[in-house]
Length: 62
Image (cartoon, rainbow, N blue to C red):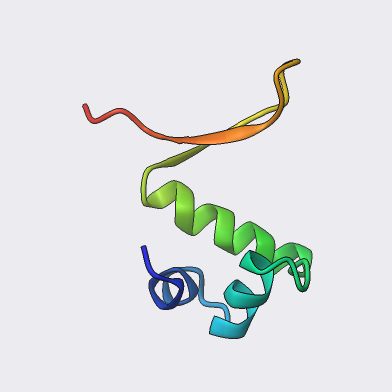
């Protein structure tokens, strides 16, 4: 997924995604939630901290 695709899917500005990926800024909570929701809709699973650290993975195809 390109930065532009993610920005469009999350309805946030491209600069929001670019700055977040480059660690220049942290999105405001509603933009962060929109980015997470867009990634989850694309098949990304967010894994909670479980002693081994938080992470992400692609959902298995059904």
